[in-house]
Amino acid sequence: MLLLNPGPVTLSERVRRSLLQTDLCHREPEFFDLQDEARKRLVAAYALDPAVWSAVLMTGSGTAAVESMIAGLVPEGGRLLVVENGVYGDRIAQIAKQYGIDHEVVKYEWMQAPDIEAIIGLLDAKKFTNVAIIHHETTTGRLNAIDQLSRACKERGIGLLLDAVSSFGAEAIDFDGGGIVAIAATANKCLHGVPGAAFVIARRDALAQAASRTYYLGIARLAKLQDARSTPFTPSVHAYYALVEALREFEEEGGWRARHQRYAKLAEQVRAGLAALGIESALSPAESSVVLRAYRLPKGVTYETLHDALKAKGFVIYAGQGGLSTELFRISTMGALDANDMDRLISSFVALLR
Ligand SMILES: *Cc1c(COP(=O)(O)O)cnc(C)c1O
Image (tube, rainbow, N blue to C red):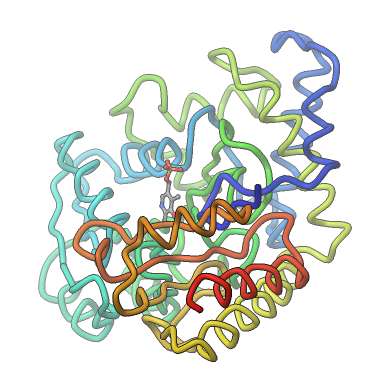
């Protein structure tokens, strides 16, 4: 079965085999070597200076990392502006509410791009310490254009918190040119690891001022103990095995730029193949990530019919979320997939629609 959902991904054999390594106690030096290697490779993935940036690991899915970032890196007494144009922006607003963080939400329709000029206007009109935005809004496949907002944050001394869960490892992220103070991501999307290990990459100066609103996901404690080759709780050891192997493979294959190229080719192959069958993309390629694309369901075909027919051919596609579930379906090209797989996918569509 090939997974075309946005994580967990189809594993390479190499990453799958890494799960079968020796049993490991998380209080032994062998585990801390693994933890150190994962943290080092995560910072190196975007060539960051380890004196400025720190990768903080945690056990959980991508949402754990987003929650840890929002709960910790909006300082005590801080005020957060949440940009929402999909499910994941809404999730950040819910997290802020859950922790009683003073926040405001600026909402856009899920098919719309955020109005960056208007958001910058808000930053001038009201006092905010932080802005949170989704980089790749997986709801629609839109890659939010964040660089102008990021620079505006920097000029105003506002910390940008970026949900990069479905972009880290495959899209450009300007860590040092703007106001990004932290990003949240996970092992099981563009890095091709397994679910269970997530991480925040944060500026060390932001970590030093972190708030302590949450116990298990408290980012300051996680960072401090990991820097001291320790860990507060039992981590998902096997997910760390897979993450480290996936990061080795990622580097050998040419890092995020190579992964971007590879996804871009596969996404274009699928787009062109489906367009020839009259299946339209929901967004133009220029607005979309290379990681996932949303398509309009063909007339008279329900998502369930399409899903079940493709699953019978060995492909798991993904439904639209919320109100988009009756209009869209999604195809992600992350994971160990190649051009032959996409050819077979298009042939399956041809057979189905005939
Ligand atoms: C996948 C994803 C998440 C995390 O979802 P989990 O179910 O916790 O893995 C968060 N943000 C975005 C943009 C995502 O695509």
